[in-house]
Length: 129
Image (cartoon, rainbow, N blue to C red; front, side, top):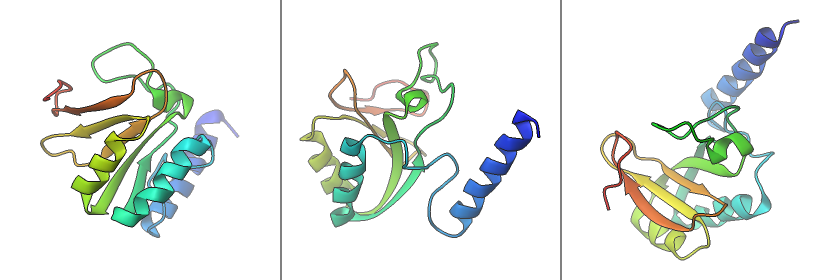
């Protein structure tokens, strides 16, 4: 079995999970540090949390050559169906990197690492505020 075939099988398994309503492709929570797992669990009080992305091998920050925290499984992107505004206010008080997106992207990004704080990014990757 080649590496490409193995990747397709894993991806297909993740797609099946997404169709059954669990996790989206590339959204396994297994590798996440306990800080992020705990944060995701606490966010449930604001509504339904759907993790859409965690570890992505070789992931880069859009528009740069720098490695993304997703490449080290130190970041998670998710949708929150519920009181998103209250959830973001709560997240801003945590010791996390918090990124929200304008325009058509409605997910929230949280990560652990050197940067702490919140900023909003446009669809082309520029800070809005």
